[in-house]
Length: 354
Image 1 (cartoon, rainbow, N blue to C red):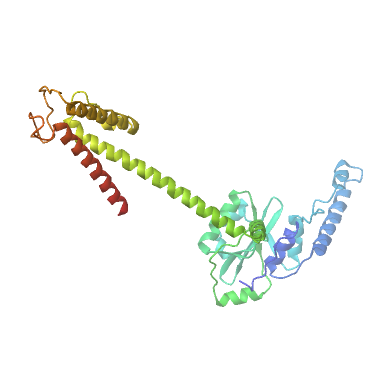
Image 2: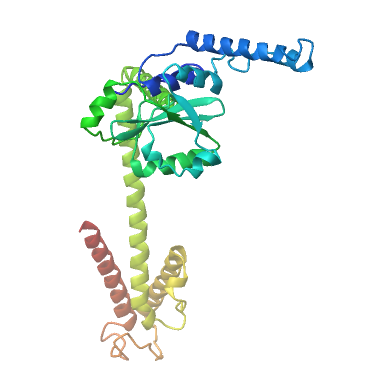
């Protein structure tokens, strides 16, 4: 690819780049193309003067040249006359006359394309086709199978396509690519894309330099490290508090589930899953206070206990009608609840340690 001559866009000199990329060398300069444009203007002026220098058409013709402008644009007439020096001519590829010939584009040697005053060349070098658009950062390889689709796409987008007829001058790239074929892994970018990429890289580099300059301040990294450690400690503390509260809720639910089957009618009957942890805690405190009050009354001298219906425990086998000879059923229940609560807490702690 290095042997292929490829002029990149400068100003509006795309016509110059198009011709030099076609001929594979610095054959034309803006001065030479301007000379051709002035010559064409003079020839056209003389023809228009034949109809009278006072005619409206002549006065209109004396307006700025249609073959060139100050930006560097040159007309198709300038390009066509420049190619005549090398014995080359242009035929409109889009014309119905040429299309009726049904010539396969692969059998041609080169094309010149134009759209909105931009010119570029598509040429065959060796046995391969290349898009030599000056707006690209380098030549773009076009496969034989894609060439027809590429030209059809240009036509659909409104391009005028001209077939270059005649023998092109010999060039080093054509001779070299006759013997070898090149492969292209990545399509060349447009010059605008390349400039945007370079600007983005420059902006990122500037941002990085500012960060590094700010990081050179004394104690900056130490302060950042301290802030990070404090944030991690606070995060772990919040997690531990959430885990502890979750463990307490689960322990209360387990204990309530174990004791709800043996409570009296005065005990709460609502399922623990429907209550908040605060409500469960308050109800359990009220229940234990009531049980302690009843036990204190039973221990007072002269207290007489009357038989009452005892609730059935979860096992269905714990009943006692002998006061003072054995542990009361309330004590058994209280002990059972306490054991279940401690067991639940220990199991939860063991799960957390795993």
